[in-house]
Image (tube, rainbow, N blue to C red; front, top):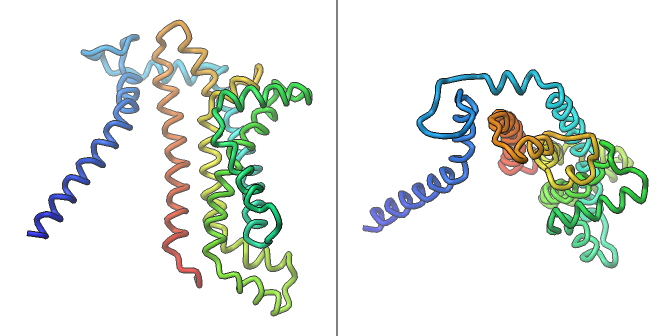
Length: 268
């Protein structure tokens, strides 16, 4: 009886998960279908199979420029945010100091702030510094937004580490920098790569902050907004498919490294 009950619960859980995935990915699936539809309007029945909208997107120099801007912004943001996240996570792991709890709370605050408020604050701050309307404006703003994600991932990894490993390296004659290079960084490598992928994905998809501070340096999400304003353009479905594939690839890579980090034993 208990086995039947367990099988029933497992079946209900599997159906629930399937419905959740269907709810999340159905709009994306429809976007992919309509991007290959010859008709301009997303209606059923569908028209003929066509790659017209992909050809139109790939031949548009403005979209290529926006894609290049998004690539530069996401890669730069990922590197800077992961570096800052690692430094913050290591300071939390290595040192005990007064006001440590408020310090960590302040660092983890940006993702909790509504994006529109952060975008307005970033615009005002960067304008005062004379940095508004440049690619570096988006990179700086996205770094503030994504660094807490990197810090959280790397901090979790460091707190799985035996603190005695660092002391053992010092006792064997290693300097602090040698210990960092040969002990800390190799141990944190899966989390660092995962943080790079995660922060790149968040930066690549972010729209509100980029729209406020980018000026003429548009990213892909900003271009999508301009296309859909006032009209229905199937190009959006084609662009959205590319964006979805890139974002999902980065998120899956981040998850793969997180799983490898959890399954790998501390002594390895």
